[in-house]
Structure formats: C-alpha cells, structure tokens
Image (cartoon, rainbow, N blue to C red; front, side, top):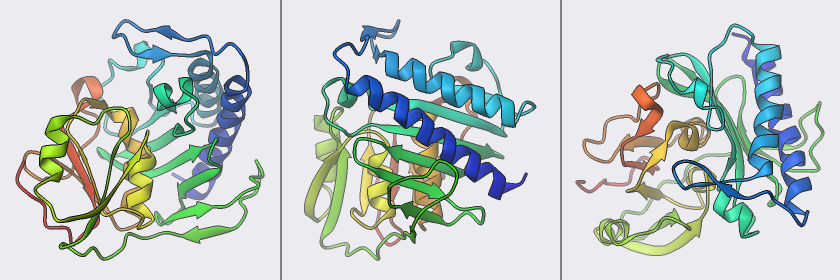
Amino acid sequence: MDFDEMMMTLRRLALEAGDRIMEIYGSDDMGVRSKSDESPVTLADEAADAVISAGLRAAYPDAALVTEEQAQTHGQTVSDFFIVDPLDGTKEFVQRRGDFTVNIAWIEGGVPIRGVVYAPAKARLFWTRADGASVEETGPFDMDAPGRCTPIHVTKPDDSALMVVASKSHRDAATDEYIGRYAVRDMKSAGSSLKFCLVATGEADLYPRLGRTMEWDTAAGHAVLSGAGGRVVRFDDHTPLAYGKPGFENPFFIAHAPGVTLKAG
C-alpha cells in the first residue's frame, strides 16, 4: 500500500466532504430525520458519505469499505479495510455547535494505522503522514496540496493534575464517577472524534468513554492519537482496542497519554 498516495486521497476526500457538510450547515433545511436506532441523520451525513464512498471505491476498488451510512457494508468480517463516519457528531451539527467531524481511517490487521479527522466548522484538520506520525494542518486548506503541518504529540501527564476531556452529548453519572477516581486539574467537553485529537495535541491527558460507540466513531481519531504517541485501550482489561469486530461495536474504552496511571474499570 502506498501510504503517501493514500493519505493525500483521504485528506482530499475529507475536505470535499467537509465542503458539502458546510453547505448544508448554512442552509435552512438540514433534512433531519431519525434512523431505525433513533439516532439522527441529515442530508449532510448522506452527501458526505456519497463523496467519500465514491472516492474510495474509485481509488481502491479492491479494498473493503465499511461506512456508517451504508448498512450493507456492516456485515463484513475483515481485518484490513477503510472505515468511514462521514459526519461524526450529528447532534452537534443539528444544534449548530461546530463540534462535528469527518472521519476516514485505514485498518490493517485490526489496527487503525492511518486516518484523517476534519472539523470543518472549526477549521481543524488532523491526519497521519505516510510514516504514521500525526500532524495538524492549518488552513486555508488546498484540496491538492497540504499547507503548513505541525507535528503533534501527547504531553507527559502529571498524574496529580490531569486534564480530562469528556463527551459533550453523552456524559453520564458512570463517566463522572470514573473520572472522580483521578486527580483532575480541569475538564473539557467536546463532541465527536475531536476528543481523541485533544489528547493527541496535549490539550488533554485522558478521555474515558463509558457508552456505546461504533468502530467508525473511533477509528480515525484512534489513528491520529496513536500517531501522536497516545493509546486507546478497552475499559475492562486495558488491552488495545481492536477493529473488525462482529457488528463493529466497541466496548467501553479509555484514550490516554502514556504515563496516566489507569484506574480499574
């Protein structure tokens, strides 16, 4: 696999999808409706999915593709595949909060090794280079050529004064109880896969998720965090979070900077 070529393709598709999302974000009609699981879906989810899926299938016709918005892709059992959440943080999108992202990742051997996370409303773009190291690119974003890219890396955490990031839309008492086991300096709330990126840039040390997520919610952020020196582990036994699981559903997990002394789940 040519990772230079792959990352330019993933980056471009994320930007193109972001443009479509922002067109609908600024419109009067987002086309909001509920899916069978009662989660919201919008015209932007579908438009972004169409852009990314068509681009990946054209560039990599033989590669497996799993995308949130196409249920027929969910029955596969694969270890090497692209996985896409075209609009992560639909609730934030509908409420015009800005904390939504485009997520595209490449999974190899059950591990997310390359990915891109783009937050178009915040003009923040994170991706892994061909060598696997993660960067944040600052705009304006050219479709065909990366701009200024700054390498990102997790910070060395102080276990006696941790910065924690938690979900903006899915915070609950169990999460608060678990966070309470740590010595916390401060907390941030963020939506979508931006939480992984805040740990990757050193803006947070710890992100626990005690709630239902799917692999497409986490894969790209996981790849970016790994490329910045961070880790994502299962909540129950602290082993690495794996991908390509039946149904693509994740267990509870913890994303963190190495050096955080993890508490038992």
